[in-house]
Image 1 (cartoon, rainbow, N blue to C red):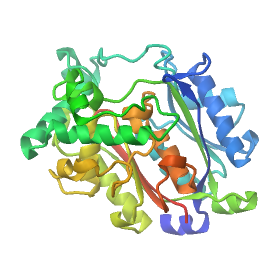
Image 2 (image 1 turned 120 degrees about the vertical axis):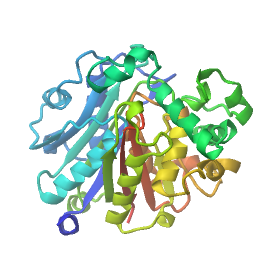
Image 3 (image 1 turned 30 degrees about the vertical axis):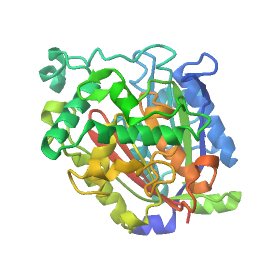
Amino acid sequence: MAGTLLASREPVIVGIAELPLKDGKVLTPMTPLQVQARAAHMALKDCGIPMAAVDGLLTAGMWGVPGAGQLPTITLGEYLGIQPRFIDGTNIGGSAFESHVGHAATAIAAGHCEVALITYGSVQKSDRSRNLAGRPAALTMQFEAPWGMPTPVGGYAIAAMRHMYEFGTTSEQLAEIAVATRKWAALNPAAMHRTPITIDDVLASPMISDPLHQLDSCLVTDGGGALVMTTAGHARALGIKPVYVRGYGESLSQWTVAAMPDAARLLPAEISGRHALAMAGIALDAIDVVQVYDSFTITVLMTLEALGFCQRGEGGAFVSGQRTAPGGPFPMNTSGGGLSYCHPGMLGIFLLIEAVRQLRGECGERQVAGARTALVHGTGGTLSSGATCILSSH
């Protein structure tokens, strides 16, 4: 059924935007609501669609304002002055926006909306609202939060330590990811950190949660981004060359680290990736550029294994030799990712924006030659959720 609907009303991405930052902060003081509105107007301008035409609205919270996450879609709709007929406030962490693309694609294909707007906004760096103090000791978190593990880094550190124990993965191999990602950031004028680093630099940076160092860890920045989706027919009428949503999948595993079925295995990515590729009808060797959530270097390594780019336990060898750096055979996280470009609490929408830019050939020095198909994967929570999108320029 899904294939029939998609064939008749192909969902495409036609507009993208993100707010410029300076030193990781928005240029002028704004609330997360203002950040999202600004990004939304920029993305709509990018494709020439008026706000009044938006009849689908998807968002996942507003970092930096206590209590603002309760009804974010309603709050944003009110602020934008629209009354959408399709709404989605799914929040599964940093993977929410890949999930939103899938949900919007399904809604567009089924005729539930014509123009879907996906947004995110955060001022966590400006408001200094990000810390390692932990989560409330309620519901399932009551079995974990009281014992003082720094979150979320502590959970990722457990996964990294387990991966090292089982497969012999080394800190040097994890550092390869940070170094390669910084090389991409050096080609991106918008990246927060562009100064080259070495593997020794990563290993010499402060230990945050053993075995993860500061340079194994994502940035803390503000950020705002938006995507506009519609039908391929609408895009043609506007004279826009769209990016097609060919496949998507989503899954989850657990919230608390103690409940992970296997601390060295990323089950949500295995499920979402398999489903997305099957829907798109392509194999991994057809992917030209990869954008995967890099909250920490171990996130990337485990994701590559889960998606099937290498076998379990082989992630360390796979990323060695700067394989994922500019000029390498596996272009990945070409904006500089969460490790060097930005990380405003949830990164997933920025992975999508970079993938669209690559497929539209708009990335300047960091452009991957001949990029026609991209895989974008978001990870949410503490290795808790996963959502995968396959995008194509044709």
